[in-house]
Image 1 (cartoon, rainbow, N blue to C red):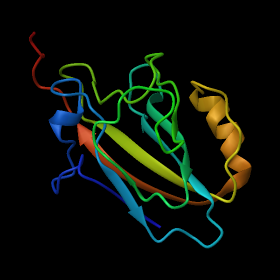
Image 2 (cartoon, one colour; image 1 turned 180 degrees about the vertical axis):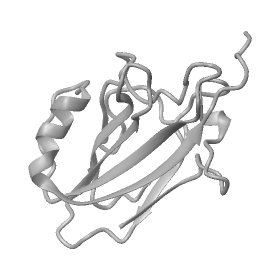
Image 3 (cartoon, rainbow, N blue to C red; image 1 turned 60 degrees about the vertical axis):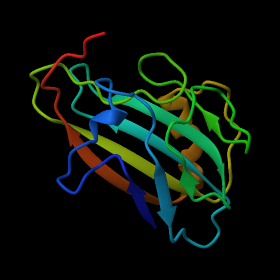
Length: 158
């Protein structure tokens, strides 16, 4: 299974439009070659280099097997028209929150991980990372990931 996003440039760095410094909107994500038996997907975006430890930027789940693309700019709502659901990020907010490391900190790594699932588990609304992983773990058939770096060199004004 292969995972791709327009958020990460050929230099390995995150496109600033998907961060707190510019738009803070979710990037376009697409994938191909799922394993046989896939009935759906789940995706998480995380920063393992955050000062307080692992920081979750996005939890998105109940992605049907026929879907292989998430468009850019998904709004922060619990359910999307096709049944896809979003959980709560480490800011305690629904949906995507872009990279936003402390100014002057070393570059942080941002992982997008897609899980192909043999069944879609029932998850509560606004699910958080730990409950999400506990529920999907028994159903994971395959995992694909991409990683990008981001370092803030300026402070957003306005």
